[in-house]
Length: 238
Image (cartoon, rainbow, N blue to C red; front, side, top):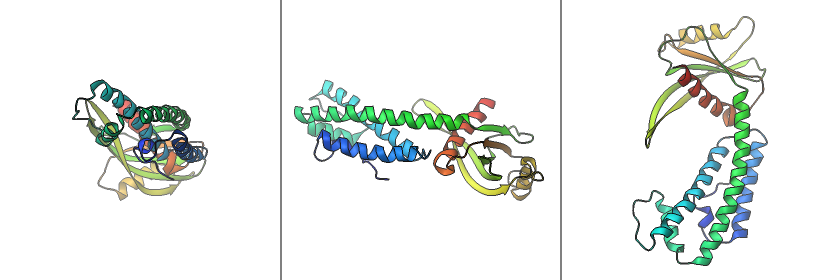
């Protein structure tokens, strides 16, 4: 997928029609992935660019209030340089504001489409613990079954906590372990027992089965949604 630079809207020749064409070409690619129910990394990339232009617009207002005082400590240093270069050119700033307004509206609409898909996938997930759960559920495994397929993907997970400003967040790292075929003689409980025998570093792991009746792209959609949903499930149960 063709990427946008962080400051695509303010680079080179500042022309509304030119930037509009660049944006629409980018969004066409994003929507093409969304129609295939493929969310990542496209949705995350789109949200980044949306937040970036909003930050530019808000910081521009801040700079205009403080101008001509020299400012320091602005987080977006690359954008600050662009502000300084264009502040004196009213015509350029007017064109840039038009570009940002148009881009924000179109990006917001596309983000909404992506989040609708995300929420739909999330609603179709069923998470259930397998066997006796340990007191510590920060590390363990989950079994992922996509659609009506008998194949079950096994993933190891580990939860961690990181701080951002004044808030604390939980994140999950996962790694693919193996694939199993389920049937009458092969249940989730049996797969868990086999896993414990072969992975003795976790003698009593937390194990979850995560199922969906519909089939979604695993790497691009299902796994990212599953990770966030399982983090919430474990946090709510703690």
